[in-house]
Image (cartoon, rainbow, N blue to C red; front, side, top):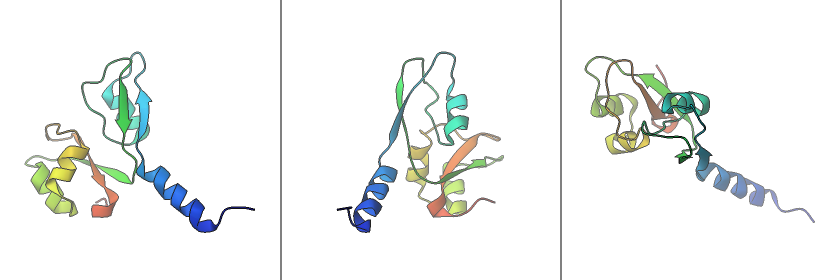
Length: 108
């Protein structure tokens, strides 16, 4: 007897909520991994490190002159602390890529 549809929906939601893990390979940089998976990665990764890749819907925003976590958070309607944590607290400077959760708003 198959499981009810609610079971499969619950399992799918659980899978989406759990983070996935990735082992850094030789020669890979945080920028390479971030581009491949479309999510933020800590800058100080090294070969053999196991990093947690957040799951969810994100888009990237290219920071501009004068941008900060607080101004970006206000622009897209997300919490400043959540945004900073999601991006590993890396400094914000013009042209740096900041990941924004889709729930907070849309891309420009």
